[in-house]
Length: 226
Image (cartoon, rainbow, N blue to C red):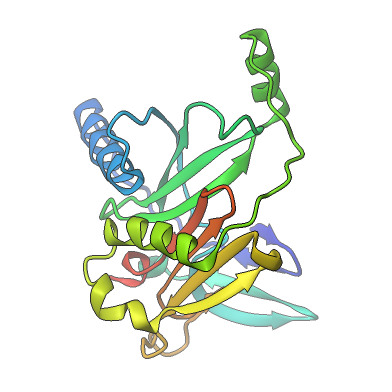
């Protein structure tokens, strides 16, 4: 059982994944790293594998039951997804933060790019190496035009049909110009009867561009594919 705010999920997932050989692990790492480096347009990006886990909080599908003011979700075998999680080595612009990447373990498709705050032990390790970082940060503003150029640059490297669907992205301005967001939703997609998804029941692509030109990214298209 996994606690998630007002609700909770009951995962009845008893089957064990087959053992992976060292060579297979190396191949998976190489494939994943290639995808991340391509998306970030940085062939020398250094990454470290963290773990394989569930794609929380941006994708879960199952049978939902209302419980008081919340709900429970029972996992369905064919809809349990796993993602390979990687951290980018180093910090972002002097901040106590780094990028975390998640990829669909089945297809090696990039499903999430998040800005993760460093843990206390990571900050202490940096200090021992003579590196200081800051927690507080005044986010600069960025124009919509500049943010859109950045967003399209990333999306073109991950979404093959971007030119065909770009006009379907919904734009929103947030934090008075400190960040810009574009969201694509495939609302025509239907899950099998009796199943629901959280936070969406259909595939989405979302990219947020901050004033410092850093991004956050969700793409659940591959996760909704069986």
